[in-house]
Amino acid sequence: MTSPRARLRELLRGPELVVAPFAYDGLQAKLAEAAGFPAVYLTGFGTAAAHGRPDVGLLGLGEMLDGVRRLAGAVSVPLVCDADTGYGNAMNVWHTVREYEAAGAAALHIEDQVSPKRCGFLAGKQVIALEEMLPKIRAACAARRDPEFVVIARTDALAPHGWDEALRRARAYRAAGADLVFMDGIRTPEDMRRYARELPEIPLVYNGKLPVADVAACGFKLMLQIATLLVAYEAMRAALAELASTGEIAGAPALERLEDMARLLGSDELDSVGRRFSK
Image (cartoon, rainbow, N blue to C red; front, side):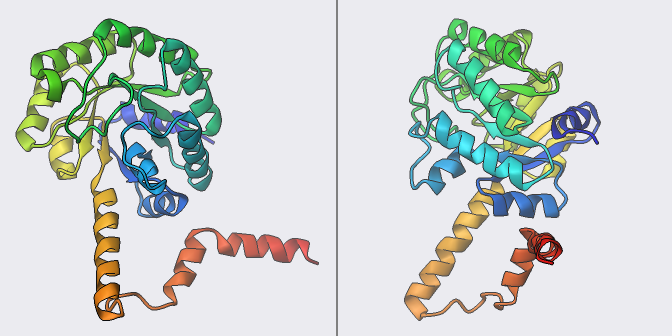
């Protein structure tokens, strides 16, 4: 059977865009897999939110590894993971890659922000020197035990330094050995098209909520689909506001939906195991 890492490599070599929805718990990951997505993305923003914190560098390697293990254990599709800044210098990045790989990740991305980092869509980002980031990328690539493990280098230089610097870093990160390059902070269709047009020779990652067809048309290899995180937040906020103001949630599904959730989570298989060994 093909491993999730080998499967991700195979998908990235193919002609189709790989879409990985945001998830930060096992239920979301299983829903994405059940919907037919070929990969799932462990979001740092969502993981921080699940701890009741903003994505401003408060979580460390331990909390993120818990998320990697939880999601990798929940699904069979490849898991692409946020690894923030790699949690330190090149030595720390080496350790991070080893730990993420052992926890079941198929890929991770490390970014060039200063520590503490900020979510890529928040204002106030700063980046380390290019000369400081390159050894981290080389260390990440060298740390792999499994050659199928995918290393993604992310630059956040667009917002603080503009296109020329972001493009310079993207090319340098690819040359340093990154399998894919991820420029964060792309907000508009025009920016997305420019990003792809300026770097035709590099396998690219897009993070956002633009239509999948438009992203695929630009030739991106991997899309991290943030809209699932936003929809989940908005739906829960609206439901709680309705409950607080009216005393009910009028559109709530019937309680039988809990049975559907239980089956998605593996209740039928576990019931079968219980019957088998209770005789």
